[in-house]
Structures are given as C-alpha cells and as structure tokens.
Image 1 (spheres, rainbow, N blue to C red):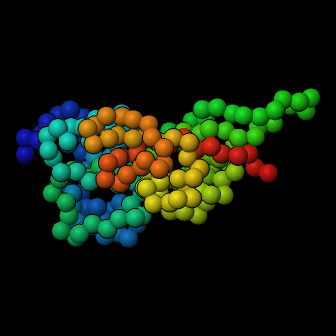
Image 2 (image 1 turned 90 degrees about the horizontal axis):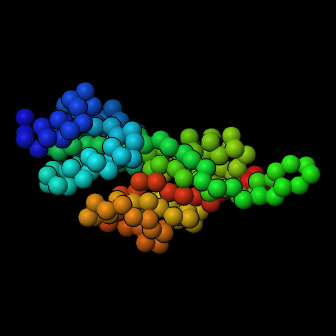
Image 3 (image 1 turned 90 degrees about the vertical axis):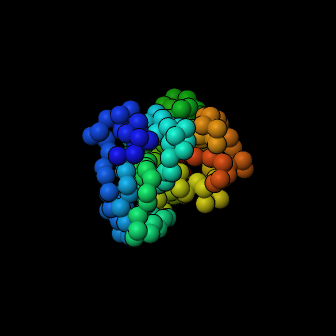
Length: 194
C-alpha cells in the first residue's frame, strides 16, 4: 500500500475506507470504475481534515455529493474519492412579530451543510413552515448546486468554504469560484410560507 494512503488510513481508521470501490454504486447514472481508496465524510470536520491531508501529501482526490452531476470513467480513479454526506441543518436566527395571537415568523436564516440533498433541505423547510419552493424537485446536494445555480446563489446570505490554502473562510455567492473553493456550508435567508 502506498505510504500516502497508509498515513490517511491510520489517521481516520481502517474501517472508514473501502478499497477499489466502484464509483458506479454512488453515481446517479451508475457509471464509474473503481476508486483506489474511497471515503465517506459525515461531518464538516472530517471533510476538512481529509482534504487538508490530501493536499499536504499531494495525493489526488475527487470530492462529490449525491453524484447527480458527475461522470467518472469506467477506468476509475487512482487517488482518493470522497463522498460528502455532511448533514447538519441549523436555524441560526428568526425574524418575526409577536402579537396577542402568538409569534409570527417572517423569515429565518438557516445554515445547511454542503452534503445535504436539496430534497432533504426542502422537507426540513416545509417542516418549519418556511418557503421551500426554490429547492423542490432539484436533484443533487447543496454544495454542487450552489456552484451552478444562480437561483440558489441569490438566496444565500453567506457561504463557508475551504480555500486553496486549506483556510476556512466565509464569502458571498459573487466570490464563489469552482477552482478556488470547496463549499462546506451555506446560510440561506428563507421567507415564511405565505
């Protein structure tokens, strides 16, 4: 086994990795050959740590979310493939009015991890009686869609990213760059349902 792979495996634990795992098992189109090493990141901390290690070791890596916007060769990938399954959705603040009839929510700031699917996010917004229409029926995760959807970018208040130097920062959607940033989470300003 390559020493670079061994360092990463020792850092996370052998049981967290799969060897020669077919990417086709994780892509929407069911295509893609084996990843030499495969890892699923369930927390933002794991995601940041493994990407930093890959960068420090100069180990090629490929990161994806739900697999709806990707195609990988049937020949596979000789580095580390990371599936982003980060899943936190957190209400940061709520704006509303208090009257004799109770509390009326007008809008909320919701922070959501980049690995959350838009379908799951829409369900959570519905549960909180917030407007979910912009997120319904769109395949993929928050991270992948934010890179390509101007509709979603307009709803974002801020985006937490991992930069090229492995620094964590907060940017707006206008500063987002596919080449410079890995999206960790985003804060959306969501109106209450009408």
